[in-house]
Length: 565
Image 1: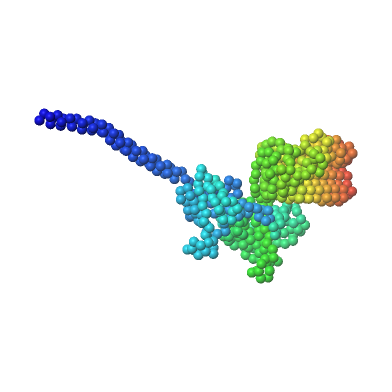
Image 2: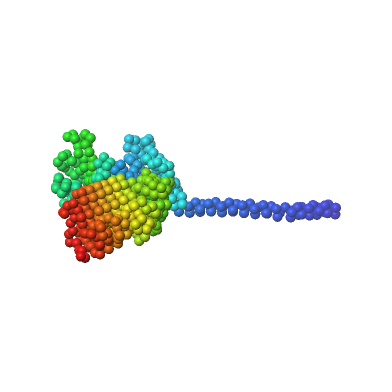
């Protein structure tokens, strides 16, 4: 009995020993399993929270506006699930317009960070998915990347969110009311620019009576009325004058044709520019038109310099060195220069372009010719900007075969001692409508402004000094209007202060002309049917052999001018 009891006790001891050995391991396994389960749940919960956070950080596109990083493409997301895309482009006449997606419907749907777009074309049935261009976008780091937009050359365009501008609407129609003066017209892609007092002028007057708009117009040719029409009713139409026009919403059709079978449409190009479209049809109005002319107007009587410049130069570029300046020169561009000195002598053949021609007619004598329409080169507001050259025989700024160019707020001259130059500061050839505003032009350039075959030159608030031959030379049908300018300290010169040759004309108004000298020359020399008019100008401390010389005593006229002797 004792033996069995001992055996039993031994077996129990072994069992207990085994149990004590196994227990901790099973407990550890149980704890590890529980911990692993908890970690997995925590990870899943964190992922869910992160996903919820990401979703909450994704912008809701409804009602937002996005602009391409290059500033030319724009996306409007409307609250009704439609969208509108437009991209600024230059039309055949050199004026800005919009490239759009000409589909019958444009819709979008946002799925988190993904956006699906659909462009349905008009020839597809309403309930059909045929003839639908689908493309996608995605949001990342506060940017929207969209690929394969119909009609776009770029495979992908990156947009950033901006302040949504107001699109045109019929609510803008009252802005037509007023008196307007034509500044430009476009016929078959050719743009003609007009100024007040030109050989051809055109004026519009739009009135409103009892909720109805009426238009009157007048053409003036060589100072005589050459055509007019009055009080023709206008009907508002919720369609643009053509697809891609800057005003994409509406136009006003005149209710009657006028003499010569002229049909007219009017719309606001923007807040400051009104557009008149004239079409001349055959006897059968259903036939193709003979011509279509787009005419652009500003409000008459206002200071419109900046408005006109912005109209002709819609592209905006900022530069900070001379190579960036050279690269930015292209039509319809306003180039703003940050403060500093821009030495054109540093440019080389690598900087040459279609619009900036590099040449070296003589050893070490680099010439740079700007050949570009609708270009503005201006100093940033409040900045000191100087354009210079070390080449004594070359003009500092040479412009040729160009139309509508602005030079504003610039100091320009040669980095050469006075008397050592053979080139002017600004040289103009075969060009028109050149505006030199608030500039300082200094020698040793032979002239501050030297022009041949160039009409419509205007200089306002500009000074010309230290030039070696004179201040201005006009040749071969050139015209210049100086207004509120200072012509001073052109001393020891070799020519006439103002030289005017071969059917050229100078007008100087409210100008100060002082401390200039050349004992052999004249203040004004006008020959070969050239003329000069000085109005309200002051002449002080000038030492010339006479005030003027001309082959016609009536060619040079001084009106209300002051002389110190």
